[in-house]
View (spheres, rainbow, N blue to C red):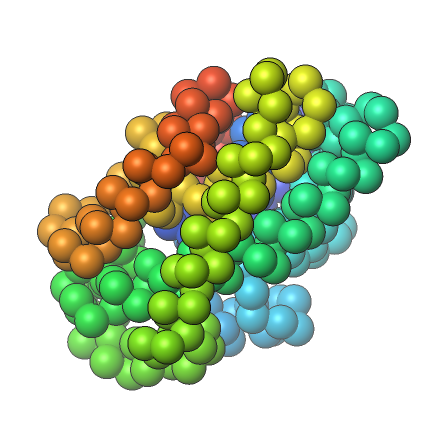
Length: 258
């Protein structure tokens, strides 16, 4: 990075799996950056003002504001091609990008819905999950307004008993497919770590709980969520997620994290 270039800034939720996808890409590329944490629900107004939409992660890179983890990885790959996340072979690259898109649609939302369905009824734990790293005052204010935030989150993510059960089934189906794609090299596409591996492992991280995930999980996890984690870890792809994190998740390159 040129010495006069502005520091990239990532706006994110700490424990979100799509945000972990963007963080991992920045760290894999070795890009020094600043992280700015947002709180679910409270993030909507500032992001709408900045980007015209309300989803994180959002990367501010040079003079561009880039929402969406897939677009962020594409921008990083263009700006810092080494070490690569896109395979050099055109066919492998196509398959890796297709798998990334499929995972973003067919796995990510269902992991999120299944996990939050079990976490949101437990207000103290859910608030600890969503506010880690913030001040005591902000945590107290968030807890006081959480009943409304919880309603908004359930509406926004379509969380109810029937859809959560469907998401759990679809998550298992996606995990079964991924287990069948892992090759002798331990990778989903080709013989090297790629955007396909990063996306699959990051999106499953909330269920599997790898030690290398960059932010601590709060104490007091409800039994219903623990059961979901045990199920994920018992699956063949759960073991693959743990191994992939151990082998390929580098330390944070964030020079500011607040």
